[in-house]
Amino acid sequence: MPDFEAALAELEKIVEKMESGEQSLEESLKSFQRGIELTRVCQKGLKEAEQRVEKLVKEGDGFKTEPLNTDEQES
Image (cartoon, rainbow, N blue to C red; front, side):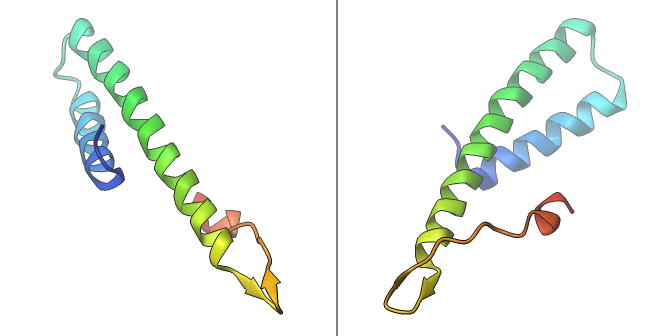
């Protein structure tokens, strides 16, 4: 399974190929399927990173979890 950066780079290449319109229907379907797999890898990586960030946010004597700013994530 590729790491987050590798999955994102491959996903970007797939999007470029699909946007070019030069693939056959069968190639496009295979690219789409691979893109879905890579998207799941990226989502898992982001979720794991979010959980690690939440563990690191410290308040007082203990730890406090805070959600990441969703406005920045959507940009």
